[in-house]
Length: 297
Length: 225
Image 1: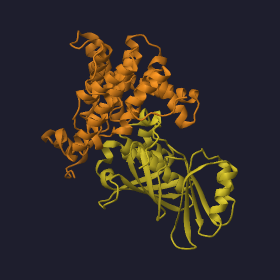
Image 2: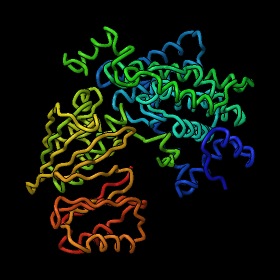
Image 3: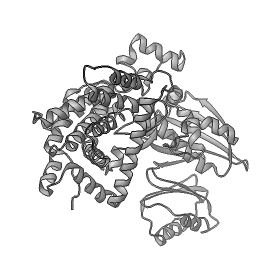
Image 4: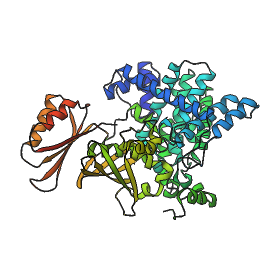
């Protein structure tokens, strides 16, 4: 019976000892800590997958407008583009990216989503796992397994570092989501637990230091596009891991480095909307348009 | 500090209506607590917004989420964004007041309700991140609970034996108490017992507590996350 694990190396030794994948270990851990049956846990995750799929569908097909009017419609725009033209990064990649954007646009328009791990980063994981599942003809069961793999990575980051933009910047928030997605992809594609964590580690390394500077403090811009790049990052890192490329710095140390970098990011660049893109002349103008001319505190 | 035992659904979850877990989901949960405390048939509600809530409520749909909560909706209710229209149809009057007063937490709201019996109730609470909330005041009395667990709130007179009677009922129904706090204004006067439990709380428990003694004035239940 698997009990708990606290970091990546713990998780890998459990996988070895039990000869199990990360997703299997994560389900057994959940049974242990929640006292719930496997059926109950699986059913709830299937429910989450359904909400994720609906959000993608809505964002790709419908004309979305956010509460402030700042974002919406770009997921659909990208879908029309990859469906009708030969694209630079290919249809598979564009589909994953557009799907991630779709969820964030639905979120910004007060639609239903599943935080993964947060609302502001909720597009990456479903966008990547669901579009890969479609491209490779996987059953939904495999996608659900991928969600558990991803959750294990998200749990380790939450426990040992942070997934909150206010605490660790965007690297912590969309970075965690993309790392989760990369690990999920690797196991869905038949990769080993080690490869999954190499994928997650490379993903975080690729965006280490990314600041959180939402325009007017809203979960809209640049969040939608950072979910786009998060999806692409997950794809590329998962491909590297599946090719046998390893992260030179182990996953646990990367998570620790990310946490320390987050602590040294100034407060103005951690979700306060006081720096970065939020503090540009255009960013300030948008703030005034949405909230009136009152000076931003 | 004790490490929280994160569930897989703390990571992939909660299910919610966007855009912000703190400004939208947490706001809906605070509204729902106010509904519980306000009693049956709430006709009027005033929201006093502080800090970041006051500054950015429009862009995050905090206003709609608060009204939705008072209407009894959960943070993942798909009708949440139509709450204003639903309130109008149901005859719930609402009003927003922006305050510049400093509060301990930036996302704080005071919710004052008036029900069909003319009874006025109020709560103060904050949305503290990730959809989590902290209720800090009920009807002017300082309290503290997060709503993370099923929470029984008992308003009672501060008399010896009341706490023992209540815990006895919890024992009868095999409900494990995770945290329990007692708050009072002055000796012998109004007091609150806040009991956070590990198990869902059946109606019979609430009925049992209600019928314990005349010292028990009100019993409310706030379901967990």
